[in-house]
Length: 430
Image (cartoon, rainbow, N blue to C red):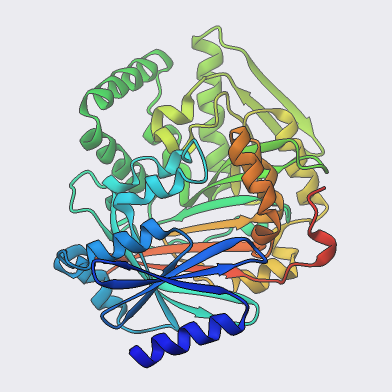
């Protein structure tokens, strides 16, 4: 180690760094000042581990922590570490107990689905491999040992097939898909989870549900959910050329159009008959678009999952009933479908999608070129400036995908990101 330290100093001095050494609890901290960039890299060697950071305080914390109990003493961490072994070129670990603090370094408002993640997940381990045009992370997620864990919803739900690429346009910014054997089973799992998570809120939900069913003389499970089959998905899509306007969609898969239409028509008929609520129906390019004025319909049943659909407008496309918040959004989707500007016709998407299992329980897809402005508009001024400064690095990873499936008491997980080098012409944000 002493020879390595001497070599370390020599190498950085020859690279025109100014090298100095500070001591902290009898351990050397090397201060490597780069006059060109006007920044200092701090490095230290603890036992046989080389630690580096641009913040001296973090190196000191690592030295302090080295005398304390190892993370290996935590059983949840040991499980994911032992399961991943030494696969991949690198190994990456996530500690979800501090994930919210980490994310708040970059955004003042956490994404809705990330709130409370520390109550659901414990640790992740990934074997990481880098190739010329992609980075691949394959590993496992260990959930918290909680009865009310959200991930329990996905245990043993079966494996349906993902079809959303048949109907969603190439410009899809965000897609999240859940596949399963039985829609009613999935719904009841969600219902059970919310009961455990918030018994008082769930009791209010049941009261509201029973009141609506009694008023309309319907049964939601029988008259709506029973016609759905093996996939539920949500998507965010820009519907203008400048990526300033985005629409949110919910997609429910069915295998029998006549049965599904009959069920939904019955619900809308009862609404018209039993309430003064407004109801609209129109034709667009051979497709029927209907407007169901029941504010919070999806939120009533699926809480966060479909919370952005307030007053659902819906149409039938391919093997899906698709909901959105307005007629314009559905018309855009129909136009793209008729033009065959859909993901399944996109060669780049197909090459990317080939890396994934079409029957994974959960699949999430991000296309950063189309998602960037959507994220930008949700940030405060300071975070927005930071994101704009780093835009080109984000664009170096044009597509990112995530899949999750239950496996041996944990969740087998895969994250893959495409990579392309920054092009000089793209360096300035337009």
